[in-house]
Length: 343
Image (cartoon, rainbow, N blue to C red; front, side, top):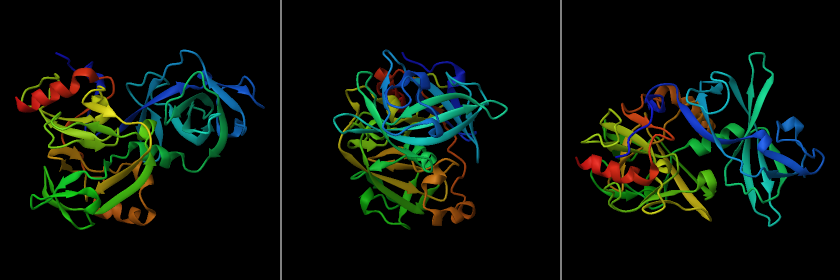
């Protein structure tokens, strides 16, 4: 039986949110042709357009735990890299192009010491990088790095997902309207406050996850964004979480068989926002609605920001255990959770 790892990998809902990022150390991505020949990727002020980079052989991505305050970012507990508590800054978003014309976007994340001096730089690519491929820097965006990270963090359903309404009917998410009443697990019928929609390239961090019919007792295939959390009520604690109610990100369930990630093409994502974070029902199983924290707030339309405090949209998270990266064996996670929900 596969169980959770050490206790520090179990994060209670309701605490300061931590997002685990899979990054490369800057020195693993260096200029092989251009003005900064030999230099590692760095902050925007040090970058030169048209420089060509390559990833070092056998470079490995490392978990950077990003702790989010209202206006600050820092290295959180459980991080495999950086100094716990050190300030982090989203320096810029950079776009690289391969010789074939395909592009990869990445964030440059900077860690600073107590005096505000640069301590380390990390590369967070939004799609896989091949160590045998050349990547030419084509754009540097200093203004929208936080928004791009928020897009990764946003939970979203895909077009066609059937949502359970207050009257029990199943309605495709693209047919919902603001004000429609949706059935929630904890608070009964609740009105939709806002619906987000965007079409994105289905690559890397944005490639959707398909949980095939029946895997978690879902009525049909459920297709969601990678960080979308599924709610599981364990009748028996098969994963040794010490808690009946758990939330599990879809990407932690990927096993390549009945939970798969589809990379390529485009995907239509939809977000549902209520007056507070809710657990709703999609394809017959429980999943979270959009949660507004300081990071995700940057993703929302500016005209909605004034309503956030009055409507308590960043209300209390469900009292469930948030299962984080590395805490489950993905090969067996879905099987264990399905069995746990049945008793």
